[in-house]
Image 1 (cartoon, chains in turn cyan, orange):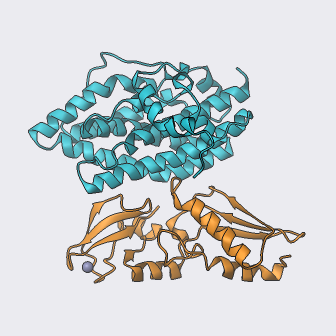
Image 2: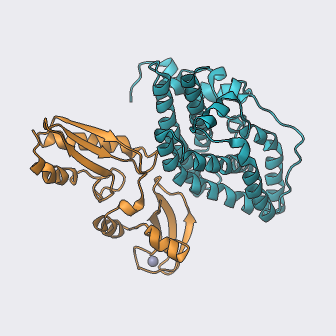
Image 3: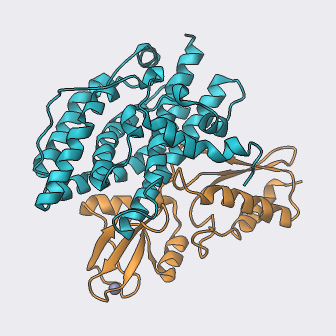
Length: 252
Length: 162
Ligand SMILES: [Zn+2]
């Protein structure tokens, strides 16, 4: 792989993470358990969409094949997506959405904090802008996991179930492959494997306050970096991409 | 042609452009106009920065600025978006903060003061009480949080500090 291709791939991974999770959160619009949460989830989704636009637009420029942010978002099939498997998992109940969000917010906070000092100035600028928003996201998901975990018997049980069922998607966030290694070597990317310790400390503190037990590391799935996704991504893309694919010349 | 002396005029034209979501504020009050550059050839460049990365108002603002310039007979211009350094609520002008409060939105705490207190002190825009409570960190638009006043019991928007 050329340096240019790896740089493109790296930006694509970051952009896809934000876009797919943003799309999932948008599904809550009109369905959240209360009005404040309806607003919160869609606001967070909008922040993620904004990050995705900046990252995918930049990825398209680096690739140099004339693909813009819309082309990348709406005209790629499942195998070409590079988002983490965790993020395409269905919303489930509110506890599932919050567990997924906490796991990713805590990770993305550290990852973007690192990217702020990337040698790629444009990426560093995007990271600095996004980090301000991610700080709010992480506080929001942290508060909910604590509130539900340390809540009623039922909320505790459902929060624990959510954490258990998503735990196997956690290790993939900290995987490093050839692209990650090259980007770290070039001073562009972040060594995510080195972030695991701090992530664990943060999550363990939240679990302790939430009276939740840390799940056992009994299973894990990975594959998104090679385009191997769960069956859920296809359905998500079918909905997200429908309009621009059915009406390719449609304009706002 | 835009001469250097006309920079002030450009600024006053841009001050006429309102934020689409908080129409009492001009884009200048919000601090999203970063620079006005005039080239030797008279070409005008307006550099703006988005408030929040996903803020849907950003594109509307860009179109509104373009319309306002054209309305004043300026056609040779470019509007460029720069995200770095990232926008901060500290760039909202004193005038902007006053207008926000009059409009019923509590202006953002200044970063320095928030750091000093260890939290953001949010004052009720209706009765000026400091006895207020956070309802949700996310509000009707990306830039606002929801608060309520424990004294006059009014709910209100707070322009959150970033
Ligand atoms: Zn009051």
